[in-house]
Image (cartoon, rainbow, N blue to C red):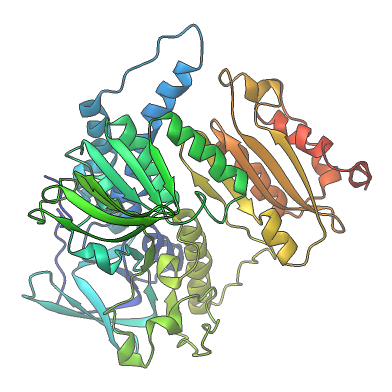
Length: 497
């Protein structure tokens, strides 16, 4: 049975001194440690109480994509005459997931970290003073005091938020959904964000009858409105019952108990739900609380240095102050989900590379690597159709004071994208600053739309004028022809230099 406990043990001395101590061994922590010491004689220790490789490797990005890709291929085949639609093999699909999470064994991650010159220290780490970390073994038997000559980095990630009325029900979190072992016949998902819509997609493919209870009036708030509309229609096409304006007030569960990752946490669940029609009951075999995440900063020792979680949340650079004005000590860095920044693995890894290099530069005297003025956050939702975006939405751009012009075309509006499958659905949109004539944001919703996104990211980071982008010739017939369609849809005066 899958477990949260690490399968590999790395011994630690009673006391240890290194240049950099990183609390949290996910991709972000690994990256900041790697960049802080590479090419030098600096040393680093990574402190991790669970599996080295973190949430993304075992409970989020990797397993979710492993579960989503086969159903997406089957759906594409269903829309391509001339090929027999494959059937989902539940056991094989879950076995594929297990392969991609290395059977929840982190030996390979430990070998990589140690091969890159990082020392892995097992246990729960907390700051106990200036550049001092105490690491306690999981069973409390031993403790290791780790001293950092140069920096302590908090890369402790985030944790699922379960609303108080649901806690006694022991609902599934995203970990259970990606680690599913027992597929519930009836599943209620509470939420309308990325976790909710992705989990609804693969759980429906596994055979669950899925109901999505969304408190708001749309899915994927924060994206362009058409993105949520396309995903809503797709989920309903899969048989998912999407209900808007539904607030969960509480519930009851028979024999609620901890049964292990991805297993039913007891008997039937009955939820009290309120919507425009009044109060009603909803019953299911399991409920997934896809109700958000928060930085994992409790009990990491911030109080020992006079800080609170609010003091570090939102830190974006190695010297920045938090929103309350309390400065961080120069030796303390916060990166990834723990910082309150965009909770995305690729963004956390990017920030880790920047901060890691800054730590190295401070120790060696090398120059800081330049950071572009505009570095947007790309995002992908791996539903079918996929939702991808980078930069500002139209509304956010207008609110920021830009003079905005948009171009929008159907995702199947080019021969290459239309050939991906029959009856392609989706929308592509660019948001452009009229005066600067540069891209502010882009959203693509459609089959394999994620492969369209990086060109938009490059255009924003490089601040490439749209009239120059028109000379980047897309191959025919590929989905990238949509770029030409979008650029042609902009006003003619933007075509000039």
